[in-house]
Image (tube, rainbow, N blue to C red; front, side, top):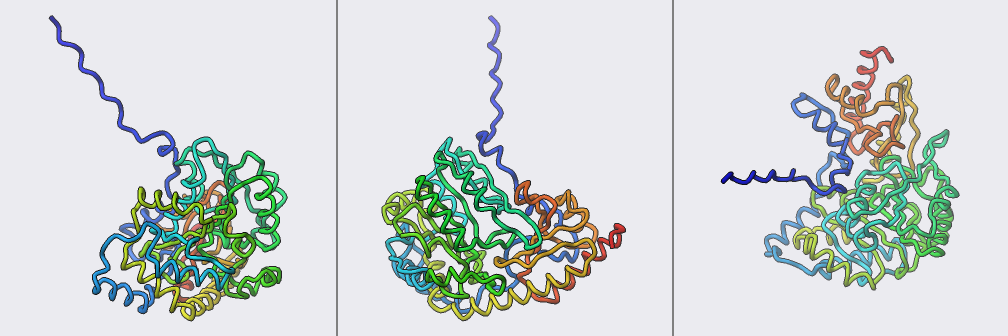
Length: 412
């Protein structure tokens, strides 16, 4: 009697939706820099400065006090109260009952999507855009359509009529990141008002990624309508929180990473309708359970004591922005416009039509690390993203390397 044929095991793959996610091209360029001596990295969205001492000291004190245990899913009460005060000062009355603390801004974005989006739902995103926002709904089985900003003489601009046309009644969620990564575009108050009215009419959720709201430079085309609606003049970009009631279909996501230089701490928050909070608590439980207690105490120090630091940071970033715009404007073939917000220049130059290959070549040949525009979707192809959150000498060194690369390739 013959032995039965052994069964062939199936190939152990992740599910199709996960396998279809696009990998990070920013990481691909950074990986190309490993082993290359003296690389100047401008590819990631973070400052080259460490977190301020008063925040680090608060975390150390919390650790010394034994703050190493689980906390409430939605965050410790003192941090939720501090955040409510902070949001209220910038955007109008907000209760701790509308605040949830998360383990990073990107975790907040995932939680927000999990709250309102499921398989087969239609999502619209304004692009170019940090890839995490576009890919997160796809993990949940949603279908994502994009509406691209336009690039022209005045930089990146939104055709709000085209966006409203895309927001059909079958749309479940709109994703907006303003100030925008990578372009630095800032949505105006009038655009927010039009979009909010349209989404109210059709029952569409707005998820607003506002992690760069404090990195805002109102010297460029200030928005008087924002001040008229109660926004803190000069201190924050226009926010949907300035217009929307706290219990309607608006979820605003924020992070400690940018305004207080806490990228590695992984701490963020959500402002959302109170009726979502019980369900949001369940999602936090099944994702991370809670943010670390001692990190939350660092967050309290940031929002309670960090306003002077943030204002100084924004002044420094504006100076860096202006310096780099001026320097790049002298490079032949470069087209760059000063953005109104965030911490990046998203510019085009000769040879950038294949931006990933170009960025990897610049890393290998001259040790210059900037992010390819294609990392932010097909709408970003032909552009490059340069994070200017560093000292001026480092920016100057980077520009010199760019010039050297162009000269080596006969483009200077």
